[in-house]
Length: 74
Image (cartoon, rainbow, N blue to C red; front, side, top):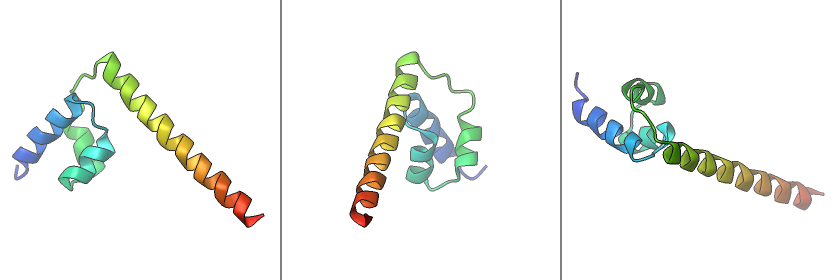
């Protein structure tokens, strides 16, 4: 295994509450690899809530940008 340090960093980041995509971008490895590395990492309830709220915020901001663009086009 050539990416032992990346795997260790991925596990540490996941326990801190980073998403799979964030870890993938930071370490420059594929999301499927990060997912495999972190599959046994148990997330706390607060970490799960934090990840869900971040996802909802990103979705809401995307919807607002889309709505603004549609208004401009009209």
